[in-house]
Amino acid sequence: MAENQNQSQHGMWSSGALFVLAAVGSAVGLGNIWKFPYITGENGGGAFLLVYLICICLIGFPVMMAEIMLGREGRMSPINSVLKLARENNRSPNWSLIGWAGTIGGIIILSFYAVIAGWITYYVWRLFSGEFVGQDAEAIGSAFGSFLASPWQVFLWFTLFMAVTIYVVARGVNKGLELAIRICMPLIFVLLIVLLIYGIAQGGFWEGFKFMFQVDFSKLKLNSLLVAMGHAFFTLSIGMGAIMAYGAYMPQAQSVKSAVGIIVIVDTVVALVAGLAIFSIVFADGLAPDQSVGLLFATAPVAFADLPFGSIFGGLFFLFVAFAAFTSAISLTEPALAYFVERYNVSRVKVAVSIGAITWVLGLGSVLSFNLLSGFKPLFGWTIFDFLDKITTWFFLPLGGLAIVVFVGYFLPRKKVWSVLEINTTWARNTWAALICVVGPIAIGLVFVLTIVEHIPALHFLIPFLVSNG
Ligand code: TRP
Image (cartoon, rainbow, N blue to C red; front, top):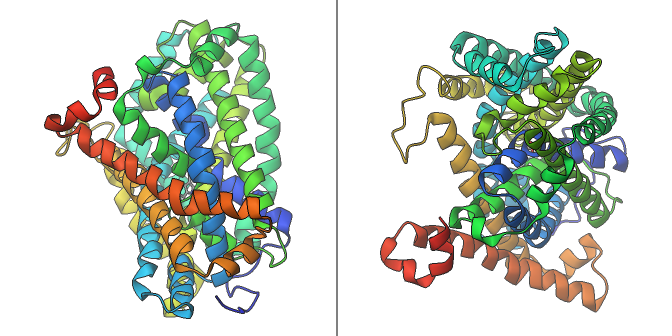
């Protein structure tokens, strides 16, 4: 690996703390607050949570360390960072496909992510306006349904969210990303505490708690494994280069492993808190835990509807989710942005606008998936939104992660990796080798194999227990 220059041409975070803040901002997002609760609900609660937590520890942690390391050593866009490291170590330039998959994956993810973030933005306004005051769960649920049914409304809020995101990323690492992160992150944490208190005050806390933490393997479906693993990647922003791109701007002296420790812990705590709060509301109001993409929108407003100052706190809560979505969205464009700036030597603004336009067009498919095209399901009964969500979360990210662990574990010089990651004791080295060379690849591979087996009935005798659940 290089005795590289210690700066990136795109700018640098002004401190190690800002890198951590930015990475936490990328990790904490709709994945934690909107997606994690509803997939936990759909997959039966505790047992799913356990599998998810195992994936975070055994796969998420090492993949994130490896990914950040690639960025910091390369100091360029993911495509060029991996290319550079591959060349320096006499490996095939094809490893840069890791960067390519991520660059494209990021744009696909942003295209549907911004649609959901648009819903959230609308709900900031909707709660502040007091529309839901005194309404019951049924009215709130149907209000969500009629919003989704209107393509123009969904389109408008999606476009607004995209425009703000592109505006900020166009301004660059320091004046754009960093400024937004400095403003949003502290607010996010304050509002999270507010949500937690409100969640507990709902009275359904214990039932929500039991739903999340009582492990009942009979509720676990085979597909839940893929859902849990895919989500571990999604929620940590790993497997596609977002965190690699951020790593390229981190200070040379910063410790990767402590940064990763903080990022993983904060991300997990936020997801658990959001889940507890939402399931408390679900059980306090007798709602269904398996409401798919609408769960957050059918529950949070119900809690705020009949509480004092509910519209203010409710509005603030959705504002917090919007900020969290925003600090994630900006990280999704960075791999592509950095690459095209390097490649064509054009201004960041031009690249940002072009990427924004492509993402926006792609996003229209997801906008229409909930109304005009809700019946258009050419593959596996998936809408366009489902398709984009699932191919990225279930395949792009884990495969990207697999390629990253294999590249770092088998194709880069071990001693260099140890020194960059400060893995110094024999114990730490063995653990690292076990995770990156063995557990990571096998666990990711196994989930894929099981998923394939699931779809071939003749092979079901291999895994009778898992198949029978689901
Ligand atoms: N982690 C974010 C969330 O949980 C989403 C996200 C941002 C992401 N950047 C990413 C997901 C890169 C995968 C890859 O909401």
